[in-house]
Length: 224
Image (cartoon, rainbow, N blue to C red; front, side, top):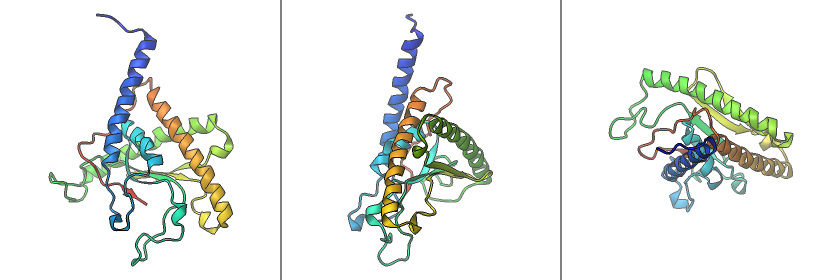
């Protein structure tokens, strides 16, 4: 049997992880949304700027349940004309869930609520996800200029969810349009760079710490 050298092993492992990302891209393309806007002609799939990044998170074993790259072009527009729903997000975010595909559903995919065991396990996974992403984000901040350090993690210990968000998300509505646009542009560049960094971190994983999310069917992901 021919043995691979260490560099060859790294190349082979990188190819395997790249193949996992490709499979997860198919999963992401199957995500559906609970915002029914087909009648308004909007594509309700995952925003293309986040598509690969979410596939990388799934490849790392980190499940998502909502995402948005921001829609400043729809600033001031409510989600539905006849309902007082929140306005569209201006800044990117990704919501991360500790729950696994199929949690809270019966065998037919109907919602039946989470069991105590599922909630407990989801809280443990959310804590693990927080530690993993926090470490990657710290590495990103250490190797990138301050103006790109716009991504934050919102997490409360003991909760089953966390969120990758953008600095300034709470204040942006109070800013003049010109300042909003500058923040949106800077945030988008920072997110694109971070998601590329996240992908490279996954591809270079030498500790074999990442395991893909076990998807067997598309899950509902909220998109704003």
